[in-house]
Image 1 (spheres, rainbow, N blue to C red):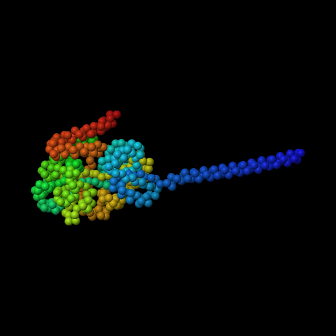
Image 2 (cartoon, one colour; image 1 turned 60 degrees about the horizontal axis):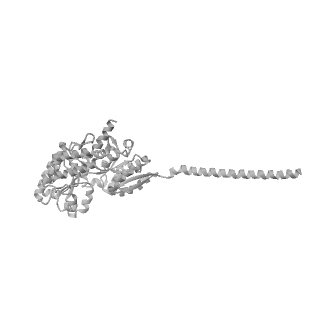
Image 3 (spheres, rainbow, N blue to C red; image 1 turned 120 degrees about the vertical axis):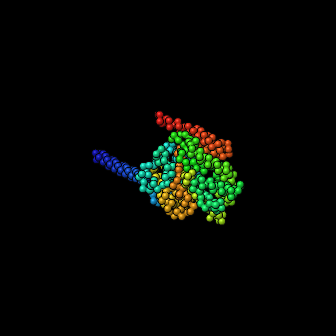
Length: 450
């Protein structure tokens, strides 16, 4: 019995040890498998940032937005860890889109920004200052940029954007019609211009004019006003300065061109086609920008292609200044990939890339080095712009400037049609500007007296 009990006990003991062994083996295998799975998950998790590129979201507007995407592949080949996603916005919706994105904490990492929009977004603390990045960059040389263009991005002594392309205004004119009036070169001063306009009017008759200054555009008056030493705003941009001697001199010169019959009192909407009217000699001079180089080449008949040219703007006493316009490249303060986005902005700022961008868009580059390269250096119509860019000035760097510029146009139109004298118009402009700037005065006063 003992043997039987011992035998049975031994058998049960044996089965228990076998079962225990099997359970232990299974448990070890399961734990080993779990550990292996954990390693795989860990490796995958640790490896995912390295295998996934850093995505830079870049917003651009209009034609530039369409074209800049063509520059992305070359950038990504040189920066294999970065992927640039371009979103093209229409200019008509871009401003509202940017403000909505800021309010919703959904701004891109970097963006093309019109120069006059920079102060507004700086006031919202939406943009990243770039001074330290520029100082440490081998691609950005501030001295290579036209100073007036560079200054459009400097707000309260800090840099918030890199000029991307330049938009300024100067004279397009008919060389043949000017020669018929007795002149073989464009004007260099306001006195020269007045003499030419008087001679053109006498030669052309009552139904033709010396210059086109569309009343629905504020830019011609603005560029003439920037030629004066007096600033358009004073007291840290909190009050208008339109009653200054300089602005009143400008307004008198501008209004006088209409009163003397040198310019037709019309808007662009009242002119069927600017290029056709230029071709038929309805006017000789036209203040416009670089985009019209291509338009004049395409739209004017072949017989007139040697009869037009560009020239820097005349000033009160010699070669004059013009507006420093265009677009800049900015970095948003809320971006989580600022270093990668900065590399993209540096790439777009390289002279050889700017030269390529000019070929694709016709936009004028902001760096002097780029102007010495390729077709741009040989383009006779671009030479006047190269000269003019050494004498450009930014409009007042305040967020309210576009509203003030609109009021300037409206008041100037009232002066042109005789409802206001020059002195009355200047006083009215100061009153309107001061109303627009009231909130700015209040905010600055709070900062000074917290």
